Amino acid sequence: MQSFTQYTPTEIVFGRGAQKEAGKLTKKWGGSRVLLVYGGGSAVRSGLLQEIKEELDREGIACEELGGVQPNPRLALAREGVEKAIAFQADLILAVGGGSVIDTAKAVAAGAYVPGTDIWDIWMGKAPLTGALPVGAVLTISAAGSETSDSAVLTNKETGKKAGVNSDLIRPRFALMNPELTYSLPKYQLCCGITDILMHTLERYFTPVAGNELTDEIAEGLMRTVIRNGRKAFADQTDYEAMSELMWCGSLSHNGLTGLGRPKDFACHKLGHEIGGHFDEAHGATLSAVWGSWARYVYQLDVPRFARYGRKVWGIEEEEDGKAAVMAIEATEAFFREIQMPVSIGELSMGVQPEEVLRELADSATKGDTVKLGCFKKLGAREMYEIYQAANH
Ligand code: NZQ
Ligand code: ZN
Image (cartoon, rainbow, N blue to C red; front, side, top):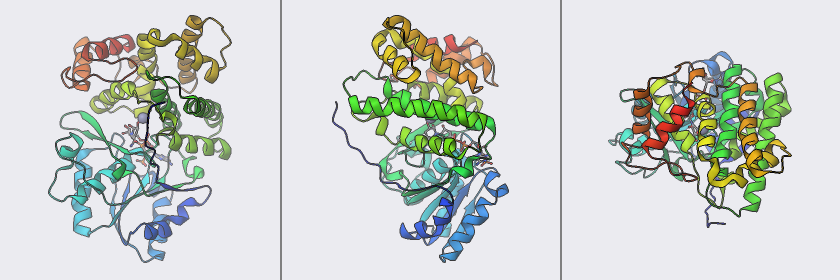
């Protein structure tokens, strides 16, 4: 087991009616002037935004709004949010939505902390992230895990670059998680979320470091739980128990727990982010579209690991490791198909791409072949291109 630091400070209120704590927790975490960040309309239509405003008002908290966050959240709107937060003298940023909204809130929180610094410089690593206003979240979709994670991902539409930062300074101080709020999700978003939750643990499971018994068991248990409840939720997304399990899995899959004691890989996320940034595809779908191609490209480096994954997560009984490993990859793809997720680039709305586009994506992901991605197998531009190519049908 490698040495590690675990830091998961987010106060979580989970269950029916959790959003009613918005005023009290905002106050507890130092908010008296709040910038309320939300998306393209679902929180307005459901009445959730109004409910949150009433809770804030009850505690005498003033608020300003930043609405209109889109999936693959835009740098431009986050910059606008920074200006608003500074002008309003906000002391806490409250996100009402999913990963895109929470990531925008985190970016605003980081930008407003250092007026005069452009947030994209922070996101590109040209300026340090030195602090952030406190962030709170009212979660409406189980997916990205941003409600407890240390990361925030923005898309610069001018360049097509989608990039994230990781810092404990932007972990939300609190998250209000009511599974009932996710009943209204479009089926496609529900399934993108299930995929993303599974992927956040898969990206921590396949690494070169062995010998993490407890972390392995937690990871495998989480993946079995996502698969079982993903199926139930797919059949009935008003199944409170299933939606609860998914929501809790979403937070634990990406707060670090399922990867403690070993490095993260996250090469599939890099492959997916290039697609999301350039073609505006939903995040979860970009991952299912490339995972099988990545897995076939790398699995021979550690066949017993893939075989174990197959046996422990998918219940595969095959005794020969080579066969079990291939069956594990096939079972994962079959699950993606079952919940109507794409398993190739051709099944995304962007469709099959010309070779030169794949080369550009690989080049962009690896910053012109200057960085290697992942750790299970380190991938340069050529390897990334070959994985895209294998998925391009
Ligand atoms: O904008 P609205 O109208 O709210 O609609 C949203 C959006 O269209 C809708 N939605 C959300 N909750 C709803 C709902 N519709 C009806 N009822 C509800 N209760 O769902 C759509 C997708 O929302 P989004 O916030 O984009 O989803 P998700 O949570 O999957 O976030 C995806 C973003 O997070 C990033 C992704 O790259 C992507 O940009 N990620 C962030 C991470 C992090 N910060 O730790 C890690 C992830 O790996 C990921 O990269
Ligand atoms: Zn993800």
